[in-house]
Length: 317
Image 1 (spheres, helix red, strand yellow):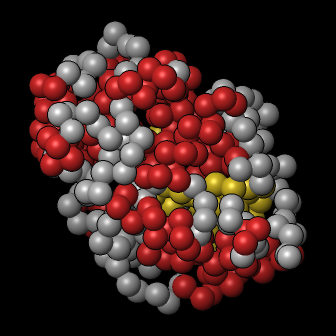
Image 2 (spheres, one colour):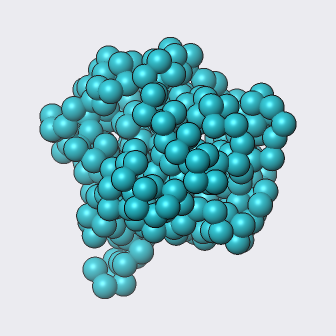
């Protein structure tokens, strides 16, 4: 059986080049249109990065283009909250099961008496933000930003144009926040939480940033570039579990069947896959499938997983 690589080599570089060449011409999917700014991002952009736990990395394509992190942010806010309150408290307030509904579903909340089923749907993400111990919106946001910076190994910033675009069109999320409040699953001011959540989704990252954030999880919570621990080792498994169960919304099962790795997508076109103890893969391409996942990003991750034997189910491949 073919061995998976544990550091950068010529085989990895070849697989990256193949993925870029093979899928650059794929024009399926459409940019997210419900957020005006995202609709304007050039749809031909495509970048792929891989980084190993020893810090070696390679990238191809538009990996220096800054895009909105969007729902991938939920992974790293979850990491902060797990470190702050612990898995047991989190699980008592937010579940870990798929909803079978779109990521912004209200029906899923109503069917379960207001309890969010997982922290990666919008309701669960806002409930997660509300669990951060903070007196003010600024304090809440500062904690999130500090965590993101530590994962990326550099200071990240909010794309204010994205933030304003989302803040002007997030009435649905505001409604979800009030619904959470009515059921007792919102643990801070609903509109403050909704605004902080909108801001976290507007953080600007590149493929290189995203792969660094992902490999920090692969490396047991230690950023291999800075050498600093970002999240407690005991909390990495719960994060990867959520990514495995709910990372790509209602097509997570299809993703795991094809890629076999914990993953997370965002409607900004980013996608992240984590190989525990080995590496992370990040891709960026704005056109999305009907579930809100990058089409070319999924194809690139599947190619790398298959070609480099990265799937967690590789023993049976």
